[in-house]
Image 1: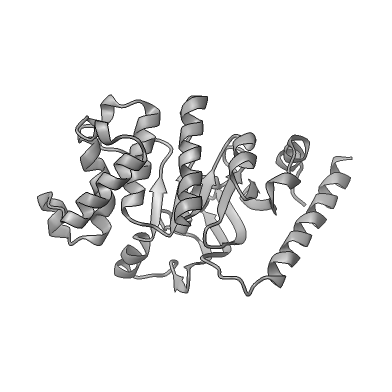
Image 2: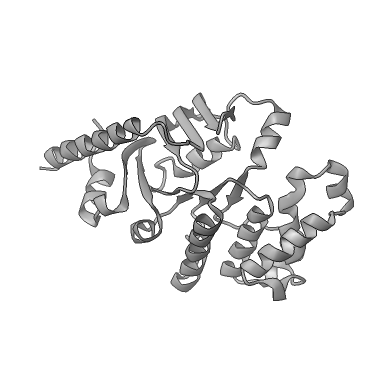
Length: 275
């Protein structure tokens, strides 16, 4: 029975792909083409992953631990080097880009990490300002000098995430939800076209998780920033995303809209063996 249902759903997936092919005249912001990643110990984290993201699209990626979700996001901005395949931001190829070109491309991609990646001993203000280092000469960052435009931008985004009153607090004095909001403000200082959020709410309580997801949706809708968000809770993914990708064993086994994915179907996609 599982096999029959799985085969039907694969046909549904193929139908979705045909629809996307028919609409290739739409603008594509990110293209991931046949990306694979094999680590030195032989682990195949990704196997021929292909998808594209339109400007302003909110994509949630679901999958069990070890399915390849984090590796996928890290390959997109080359924190992890893909073994095979190509990735394009607009018309610019990320894979194979020189260090100087990669630095320019990374300015367009904001990162929101699961564990926040803040410097605990620094203030909220300084942590947010580091989001602008990619567009500044190296000497400015080393000297702690930031131009007025960067300072004004940081103020705007701290207010946006509701932490203007915490600007002079040390990062390690904040709650987990507040620290994640600092991480989002830091990403926004870059003025990115794309935000990659890797399990941004997995360590948070439900109220804080909702605050973070509401904030990401607001950024997506008001600023038109594309978002790819790894999540472990299917209900959150269905509530906030316009589109779902499901990974299993490094392969995409579902790519479609949230209304196509109920709990029983998701469970079957997680558990069914790949053909």
